[in-house]
Length: 256
Ligand code: NAP
Image (cartoon, rainbow, N blue to C red; front, side, top):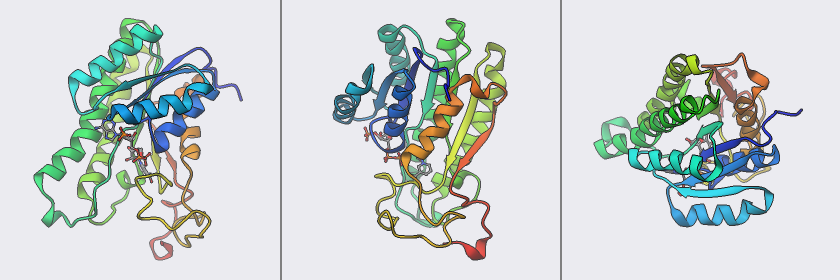
């Protein structure tokens, strides 16, 4: 299916690794020009080197929790590539599991800053650029199944991901006057650097994890992100698309 993305411009935060990198690959395959952004300059450079053969790729380092960085990311994207059609707010972190009674304020603040402030800043700056250029763009945020259910000993992550669902709805309403659609993807367990310590190796069945007894691949999330970045789903905004192999639909007694 032609998603109609050819010739358009996307920014993917956290695009250097995992789900973000798979999203960059997918959007390049669709004919987009893509800005790979992540916190560490060396990580951005490595991704640009690897992905550059697949299409027009620019790299811009940016800490999504820092307003000046995000303003520069969007301004520099428009300067280098002429426009901004799609913003994917994917950058994120996970913490070691800890009961909330032992959680520090620093752990709380860092998690909320990267996920919530980062999504707020990237969404706001993208919408300003799209509004000013009269581009009815797309913003895709990344929540999690943890935003819809509760994972024990991860209060900061659960709250941040649930917050992103609410923030996505607010952006969908507030940016609608300019034709900007905003949706979120909620992945379940996906094989990335973030989860290697928690998951068995690929190929080992994980009975009870979901209707499908396995974790997902980054490309399987990227496919949903590409769909939401396109005009194919024009009547979707404020929605949450769950990509979890049937994790949330399974009754608790069957869970992994
Ligand atoms: P990952 O492989 O650990 O990659 C994380 C990415 O985020 C890296 O590109 C990293 O940049 C970037 N990043 C971290 N802090 C940043 C900051 N302050 N500013 C800018 N970039 C920053 O993670 P992933 O598993 O692909 O996760 C991507 C997103 O999906 C996250 O929002 C995560 O919460 C969400 N998610 C993941 C899963 C899963 O099972 N993996 C499930 C549900 C939701 P550097 O390379 O520069 O360090």
